[in-house]
Image 1 (cartoon, rainbow, N blue to C red):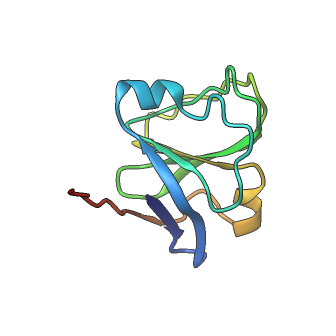
Image 2: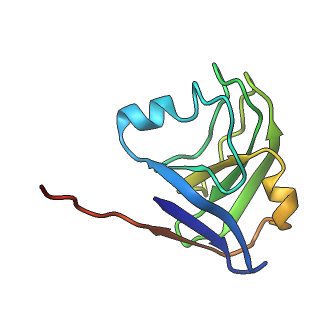
Length: 122
């Protein structure tokens, strides 16, 4: 489970998100997702740019540097849109459309990410 905080604005971007960090999860991304509720989101790492091909919902996209600062923002990317490539980005955050505006997130803001993982044994 992924949690992302905007330290600069003291707001939460993602409360219960996922991480896409291998060939399959990065390829799939949010394809097939019909609804992305507030608090949900996806981190794609490594990533410098995104597309919304085959997606059915609009999303906000944050491009984040390796030191955790927002380097660019695409607001309300519509399905089938293609975003720009940002060489300064280490990863991207895909959020519900309107989340960037709702949290006041701006280029230059500092983010912190935490991933909760646990092992289950039987």
